Length: 334
Ligand code: ATP
Ligand code: MG
Image (cartoon, rainbow, N blue to C red):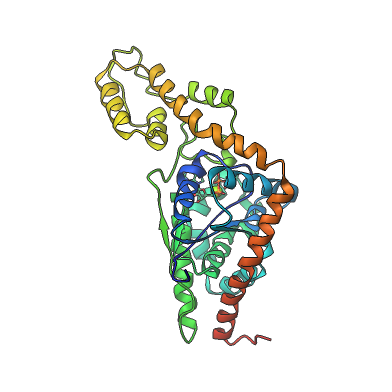
Protein backbone atom coordinates (compact mmCIF):
# COMPACT_ATOMS: atom_id res chain seq x y z
CA UNK A 1 0.00 0.00 0.00
CA UNK A 2 2.65 2.54 1.07
CA UNK A 3 4.75 1.63 -2.00
CA UNK A 4 2.17 3.11 -4.37
CA UNK A 5 3.45 5.99 -6.49
CA UNK A 6 1.86 9.34 -5.65
CA UNK A 7 -0.11 11.48 -8.10
CA UNK A 8 -0.95 15.12 -7.48
CA UNK A 9 -3.13 17.17 -9.80
CA UNK A 10 -5.42 20.06 -9.30
CA UNK A 11 -7.80 22.55 -10.79
CA UNK A 12 -8.47 26.19 -10.15
CA UNK A 13 -12.03 26.66 -8.88
CA UNK A 14 -12.65 29.46 -11.38
CA UNK A 15 -15.69 27.77 -12.94
CA UNK A 16 -17.30 24.37 -13.51
CA UNK A 17 -15.13 21.84 -15.36
CA UNK A 18 -15.28 21.37 -19.12
CA UNK A 19 -14.40 18.81 -21.77
CA UNK A 20 -10.81 20.14 -21.96
CA UNK A 21 -10.30 19.17 -18.32
CA UNK A 22 -11.96 15.85 -18.98
CA UNK A 23 -9.75 14.67 -21.86
CA UNK A 24 -6.62 16.53 -20.76
CA UNK A 25 -6.53 15.24 -17.19
CA UNK A 26 -9.71 14.14 -15.41
CA UNK A 27 -10.27 10.99 -17.47
CA UNK A 28 -6.77 9.74 -16.59
CA UNK A 29 -7.29 10.54 -12.93
CA UNK A 30 -10.41 8.37 -12.89
CA UNK A 31 -8.46 5.48 -14.44
CA UNK A 32 -5.31 5.93 -12.34
CA UNK A 33 -6.94 6.22 -8.93
CA UNK A 34 -6.99 2.43 -8.59
CA UNK A 35 -3.24 1.93 -9.00
CA UNK A 36 -1.80 5.10 -7.52
CA UNK A 37 -1.99 7.05 -4.30
CA UNK A 38 -3.87 9.99 -5.75
CA UNK A 39 -4.43 13.51 -4.41
CA UNK A 40 -6.47 16.19 -6.13
CA UNK A 41 -5.95 19.74 -5.00
CA UNK A 42 -8.69 22.32 -5.37
CA UNK A 43 -6.32 25.22 -6.01
CA UNK A 44 -8.32 28.09 -4.54
CA UNK A 45 -5.24 30.19 -3.69
CA UNK A 46 -4.04 29.87 -7.25
CA UNK A 47 -7.55 30.77 -8.43
CA UNK A 48 -7.26 33.99 -6.42
CA UNK A 49 -4.04 35.03 -8.17
CA UNK A 50 -6.07 36.55 -11.00
CA UNK A 51 -9.34 36.94 -9.07
CA UNK A 52 -8.07 38.77 -6.00
CA UNK A 53 -10.91 41.29 -6.07
CA UNK A 54 -13.63 38.69 -6.54
CA UNK A 55 -12.98 36.05 -3.86
CA UNK A 56 -16.66 35.10 -3.85
CA UNK A 57 -16.25 33.73 -7.37
CA UNK A 58 -13.59 31.30 -6.16
CA UNK A 59 -15.59 30.38 -3.05
CA UNK A 60 -18.72 29.66 -5.09
CA UNK A 61 -16.93 27.47 -7.58
CA UNK A 62 -15.41 25.10 -5.03
CA UNK A 63 -18.55 22.92 -4.74
CA UNK A 64 -19.06 23.17 -8.51
CA UNK A 65 -15.67 21.59 -9.15
CA UNK A 66 -16.25 18.96 -6.45
CA UNK A 67 -19.56 17.96 -8.04
CA UNK A 68 -17.77 17.65 -11.39
CA UNK A 69 -15.13 15.34 -9.89
CA UNK A 70 -17.69 12.99 -8.44
CA UNK A 71 -19.81 13.09 -11.60
CA UNK A 72 -16.77 12.18 -13.71
CA UNK A 73 -16.05 9.15 -11.51
CA UNK A 74 -13.51 10.32 -8.95
CA UNK A 75 -14.08 8.09 -5.93
CA UNK A 76 -13.28 9.81 -2.61
CA UNK A 77 -12.53 6.40 -1.12
CA UNK A 78 -9.62 6.05 -3.58
CA UNK A 79 -8.64 9.68 -4.18
CA UNK A 80 -7.98 12.30 -1.51
CA UNK A 81 -9.55 15.60 -2.56
CA UNK A 82 -8.16 18.55 -0.60
CA UNK A 83 -8.21 22.34 -0.49
CA UNK A 84 -5.05 24.35 -1.11
CA UNK A 85 -5.88 27.11 1.40
CA UNK A 86 -6.47 24.54 4.15
CA UNK A 87 -2.86 23.34 3.90
CA UNK A 88 -0.55 25.99 5.38
CA UNK A 89 2.56 23.91 4.61
CA UNK A 90 2.01 24.72 0.93
CA UNK A 91 2.21 28.45 1.59
CA UNK A 92 5.27 28.00 3.81
CA UNK A 93 7.09 25.93 1.20
CA UNK A 94 6.20 28.58 -1.38
CA UNK A 95 7.83 31.22 0.84
CA UNK A 96 10.98 29.11 1.12
CA UNK A 97 11.13 28.33 -2.61
CA UNK A 98 10.66 31.97 -3.61
CA UNK A 99 14.19 32.66 -2.43
CA UNK A 100 15.80 30.20 -4.81
CA UNK A 101 13.98 31.29 -7.99
CA UNK A 102 14.89 34.45 -9.87
CA UNK A 103 12.42 36.98 -11.24
CA UNK A 104 14.02 36.41 -14.66
CA UNK A 105 13.19 32.69 -14.42
CA UNK A 106 9.50 33.17 -13.59
CA UNK A 107 9.19 35.78 -16.32
CA UNK A 108 10.56 33.29 -18.81
CA UNK A 109 7.86 30.66 -18.13
CA UNK A 110 6.05 30.48 -21.51
CA UNK A 111 2.62 29.56 -20.10
CA UNK A 112 2.71 32.43 -17.60
CA UNK A 113 3.98 34.81 -20.29
CA UNK A 114 1.14 33.79 -22.58
CA UNK A 115 -1.49 34.12 -19.84
CA UNK A 116 -0.20 37.55 -18.82
CA UNK A 117 -0.53 38.74 -22.43
CA UNK A 118 -3.97 37.11 -22.80
CA UNK A 119 -5.31 38.74 -19.64
CA UNK A 120 -3.84 42.12 -20.64
CA UNK A 121 -2.29 42.68 -17.19
CA UNK A 122 0.62 44.96 -18.16
CA UNK A 123 1.58 46.96 -14.99
CA UNK A 124 -1.50 45.70 -13.10
CA UNK A 125 -0.03 42.19 -12.97
CA UNK A 126 -0.59 40.81 -9.44
CA UNK A 127 2.64 39.61 -7.80
CA UNK A 128 0.86 36.40 -6.83
CA UNK A 129 0.05 35.62 -10.44
CA UNK A 130 3.65 35.99 -11.57
CA UNK A 131 4.84 33.55 -8.92
CA UNK A 132 2.07 30.97 -9.13
CA UNK A 133 4.42 28.41 -10.76
CA UNK A 134 6.46 28.52 -7.54
CA UNK A 135 3.40 27.78 -5.43
CA UNK A 136 2.52 25.00 -7.85
CA UNK A 137 6.00 23.55 -7.30
CA UNK A 138 5.28 23.69 -3.56
CA UNK A 139 1.98 21.84 -4.10
CA UNK A 140 3.49 19.03 -6.15
CA UNK A 141 6.61 18.58 -4.04
CA UNK A 142 4.79 18.79 -0.69
CA UNK A 143 2.95 15.59 -1.62
CA UNK A 144 6.18 14.05 -2.99
CA UNK A 145 4.20 13.41 -6.15
CA UNK A 146 6.05 11.71 -8.97
CA UNK A 147 3.31 11.66 -11.59
CA UNK A 148 1.23 14.65 -12.65
CA UNK A 149 -1.50 14.01 -15.27
CA UNK A 150 -2.00 17.38 -16.97
CA UNK A 151 -2.66 19.17 -20.23
CA UNK A 152 0.36 20.36 -22.22
CA UNK A 153 -0.01 23.96 -20.96
CA UNK A 154 1.38 22.60 -17.69
CA UNK A 155 4.69 21.27 -19.06
CA UNK A 156 6.59 24.47 -18.21
CA UNK A 157 5.26 24.20 -14.63
CA UNK A 158 6.58 20.66 -14.29
CA UNK A 159 9.95 21.72 -15.70
CA UNK A 160 10.13 24.58 -13.23
CA UNK A 161 9.07 22.33 -10.36
CA UNK A 162 11.91 19.94 -11.14
CA UNK A 163 14.41 22.80 -11.19
CA UNK A 164 13.21 23.91 -7.76
CA UNK A 165 13.34 20.34 -6.43
CA UNK A 166 16.90 19.98 -7.71
CA UNK A 167 18.05 23.26 -6.23
CA UNK A 168 16.32 22.75 -2.88
CA UNK A 169 17.60 19.18 -2.52
CA UNK A 170 21.14 20.43 -3.19
CA UNK A 171 20.81 22.73 -0.16
CA UNK A 172 19.79 19.88 2.15
CA UNK A 173 22.13 17.32 3.72
CA UNK A 174 20.12 14.56 2.00
CA UNK A 175 17.46 14.86 -0.72
CA UNK A 176 13.94 15.32 0.64
CA UNK A 177 11.95 16.30 -2.47
CA UNK A 178 11.13 14.07 -5.44
CA UNK A 179 11.32 14.83 -9.13
CA UNK A 180 8.05 14.55 -11.02
CA UNK A 181 6.90 13.66 -14.51
CA UNK A 182 3.99 15.04 -16.49
CA UNK A 183 1.63 12.42 -17.83
CA UNK A 184 0.02 13.67 -21.01
CA UNK A 185 -3.12 12.18 -22.50
CA UNK A 186 -3.74 11.52 -26.20
CA UNK A 187 -5.51 14.89 -26.29
CA UNK A 188 -3.21 17.09 -24.29
CA UNK A 189 -4.75 20.29 -25.63
CA UNK A 190 -8.40 20.27 -26.64
CA UNK A 191 -9.26 23.26 -28.85
CA UNK A 192 -12.25 25.42 -27.96
CA UNK A 193 -15.62 24.80 -29.62
CA UNK A 194 -14.81 27.93 -31.65
CA UNK A 195 -11.69 26.20 -33.02
CA UNK A 196 -9.27 28.41 -31.03
CA UNK A 197 -6.12 26.85 -29.62
CA UNK A 198 -7.36 25.84 -26.16
CA UNK A 199 -10.71 25.25 -24.53
CA UNK A 200 -10.48 27.44 -21.45
CA UNK A 201 -12.77 28.91 -18.84
CA UNK A 202 -11.14 32.29 -19.37
CA UNK A 203 -11.82 32.25 -23.11
CA UNK A 204 -15.54 31.39 -22.95
CA UNK A 205 -15.27 28.64 -25.58
CA UNK A 206 -16.12 25.66 -23.40
CA UNK A 207 -18.53 22.77 -23.30
CA UNK A 208 -19.14 22.03 -19.65
CA UNK A 209 -19.52 18.55 -18.17
CA UNK A 210 -22.92 19.87 -17.08
CA UNK A 211 -23.94 21.17 -20.55
CA UNK A 212 -27.61 20.69 -21.48
CA UNK A 213 -28.70 18.61 -24.47
CA UNK A 214 -29.60 21.82 -26.30
CA UNK A 215 -26.22 23.48 -25.58
CA UNK A 216 -24.37 20.42 -26.89
CA UNK A 217 -26.53 20.42 -30.02
CA UNK A 218 -25.90 24.11 -30.67
CA UNK A 219 -22.14 23.83 -30.04
CA UNK A 220 -21.73 20.93 -32.47
CA UNK A 221 -23.92 22.59 -35.13
CA UNK A 222 -21.80 25.75 -34.99
CA UNK A 223 -18.48 23.87 -35.10
CA UNK A 224 -15.89 24.79 -37.67
CA UNK A 225 -15.15 22.13 -40.33
CA UNK A 226 -13.33 22.60 -43.65
CA UNK A 227 -14.52 25.86 -45.24
CA UNK A 228 -13.54 24.56 -48.70
CA UNK A 229 -15.72 21.44 -48.31
CA UNK A 230 -18.80 22.85 -50.01
CA UNK A 231 -20.45 19.83 -51.64
CA UNK A 232 -20.72 16.41 -50.01
CA UNK A 233 -18.83 14.96 -52.98
CA UNK A 234 -15.85 17.35 -52.51
CA UNK A 235 -12.70 15.96 -50.84
CA UNK A 236 -12.38 17.45 -47.34
CA UNK A 237 -9.51 18.43 -45.02
CA UNK A 238 -9.03 16.78 -41.64
CA UNK A 239 -6.27 19.08 -40.37
CA UNK A 240 -7.72 21.93 -38.37
CA UNK A 241 -11.20 20.44 -38.69
CA UNK A 242 -12.57 20.72 -35.15
CA UNK A 243 -15.24 18.06 -35.69
CA UNK A 244 -12.56 15.47 -36.42
CA UNK A 245 -10.35 16.67 -33.57
CA UNK A 246 -13.31 16.07 -31.26
CA UNK A 247 -14.16 12.71 -32.85
CA UNK A 248 -10.54 11.67 -32.18
CA UNK A 249 -10.78 12.85 -28.59
CA UNK A 250 -14.19 11.44 -27.68
CA UNK A 251 -15.40 8.73 -30.05
CA UNK A 252 -15.00 5.30 -28.48
CA UNK A 253 -14.66 3.50 -31.86
CA UNK A 254 -11.26 4.51 -33.31
CA UNK A 255 -11.67 2.23 -36.36
CA UNK A 256 -14.89 3.94 -37.29
CA UNK A 257 -13.29 7.39 -36.94
CA UNK A 258 -10.37 6.28 -39.15
CA UNK A 259 -12.82 5.07 -41.81
CA UNK A 260 -14.77 8.34 -41.61
CA UNK A 261 -11.56 10.33 -42.06
CA UNK A 262 -10.58 8.36 -45.15
CA UNK A 263 -14.06 8.77 -46.60
CA UNK A 264 -14.12 12.52 -45.85
CA UNK A 265 -10.71 13.08 -47.46
CA UNK A 266 -11.74 11.14 -50.51
CA UNK A 267 -15.07 12.98 -50.86
CA UNK A 268 -18.61 11.76 -50.38
CA UNK A 269 -18.99 12.24 -46.63
CA UNK A 270 -20.97 15.31 -45.58
CA UNK A 271 -20.27 17.61 -42.62
CA UNK A 272 -23.81 17.03 -41.36
CA UNK A 273 -23.20 13.27 -41.04
CA UNK A 274 -19.90 13.84 -39.20
CA UNK A 275 -21.54 16.33 -36.86
CA UNK A 276 -24.39 13.93 -36.14
CA UNK A 277 -21.89 11.22 -35.25
CA UNK A 278 -20.05 13.64 -32.93
CA UNK A 279 -23.22 14.94 -31.35
CA UNK A 280 -24.45 11.44 -30.50
CA UNK A 281 -21.15 10.58 -28.84
CA UNK A 282 -20.98 13.84 -26.85
CA UNK A 283 -24.61 13.51 -25.76
CA UNK A 284 -23.87 9.95 -24.56
CA UNK A 285 -20.72 11.04 -22.75
CA UNK A 286 -22.16 14.09 -21.02
CA UNK A 287 -25.73 12.96 -20.15
CA UNK A 288 -24.81 10.59 -17.29
CA UNK A 289 -22.31 13.10 -15.85
CA UNK A 290 -24.88 15.90 -16.03
CA UNK A 291 -27.43 13.76 -14.22
CA UNK A 292 -25.09 12.63 -11.45
CA UNK A 293 -23.80 16.17 -11.06
CA UNK A 294 -27.30 17.59 -10.63
CA UNK A 295 -27.77 15.34 -7.60
CA UNK A 296 -24.38 16.06 -6.02
CA UNK A 297 -24.61 19.84 -6.37
CA UNK A 298 -27.79 19.85 -4.29
CA UNK A 299 -25.85 18.68 -1.28
CA UNK A 300 -23.11 21.27 -0.83
CA UNK A 301 -22.77 20.27 2.84
CA UNK A 302 -21.78 16.76 1.79
CA UNK A 303 -19.33 18.10 -0.81
CA UNK A 304 -17.64 20.46 1.65
CA UNK A 305 -17.38 17.82 4.36
CA UNK A 306 -15.71 15.50 1.89
CA UNK A 307 -13.22 18.27 1.13
CA UNK A 308 -12.64 18.85 4.84
CA UNK A 309 -11.92 15.18 5.44
CA UNK A 310 -9.53 15.03 2.48
CA UNK A 311 -7.77 18.20 3.63
CA UNK A 312 -7.25 16.74 7.10
CA UNK A 313 -5.58 13.71 5.55
CA UNK A 314 -3.40 15.88 3.28
CA UNK A 315 -2.47 18.16 6.19
CA UNK A 316 -0.21 15.58 7.85
CA UNK A 317 1.61 14.62 4.65
CA UNK A 318 2.35 18.20 3.61
CA UNK A 319 3.36 19.20 7.17
CA UNK A 320 5.80 16.30 7.24
CA UNK A 321 7.51 17.44 4.01
CA UNK A 322 7.72 21.00 5.31
CA UNK A 323 9.28 19.74 8.51
CA UNK A 324 11.91 17.74 6.60
CA UNK A 325 12.80 20.75 4.43
CA UNK A 326 13.02 23.08 7.44
CA UNK A 327 15.20 20.66 9.40
CA UNK A 328 17.46 20.24 6.36
CA UNK A 329 17.80 24.00 5.98
CA UNK A 330 18.53 24.44 9.66
CA UNK A 331 15.32 26.36 10.35
CA UNK A 332 14.42 25.76 14.01
CA UNK A 333 11.40 23.47 14.25
CA UNK A 334 9.59 23.67 17.57
P1 ATP B 1 -8.45 29.01 -16.24
O1 ATP B 1 -8.86 29.62 -17.54
O2 ATP B 1 -9.13 29.58 -15.04
O3 ATP B 1 -6.95 28.89 -16.09
P2 ATP B 1 -8.54 26.36 -17.30
O4 ATP B 1 -9.73 26.03 -18.13
O5 ATP B 1 -7.23 26.64 -17.97
O6 ATP B 1 -8.98 27.52 -16.34
P3 ATP B 1 -7.18 24.97 -15.14
O7 ATP B 1 -7.87 24.82 -13.81
O8 ATP B 1 -6.14 26.03 -15.30
O9 ATP B 1 -8.33 25.18 -16.26
O10 ATP B 1 -6.56 23.58 -15.60
C1 ATP B 1 -6.74 22.35 -14.88
C2 ATP B 1 -6.17 21.17 -15.63
O11 ATP B 1 -6.90 20.94 -16.84
C3 ATP B 1 -4.71 21.35 -16.08
O12 ATP B 1 -4.05 20.10 -15.95
C4 ATP B 1 -4.81 21.73 -17.52
O13 ATP B 1 -3.66 21.36 -18.26
C5 ATP B 1 -6.02 20.91 -17.96
N1 ATP B 1 -6.70 21.57 -19.09
C6 ATP B 1 -7.40 22.72 -19.05
N2 ATP B 1 -7.86 23.04 -20.26
C7 ATP B 1 -7.45 22.05 -21.11
C8 ATP B 1 -7.62 21.79 -22.51
N3 ATP B 1 -8.30 22.61 -23.28
N4 ATP B 1 -7.07 20.67 -23.04
C9 ATP B 1 -6.37 19.80 -22.26
N5 ATP B 1 -6.17 19.99 -20.93
C10 ATP B 1 -6.70 21.09 -20.36
MG1 MG C 1 -5.50 27.40 -16.70
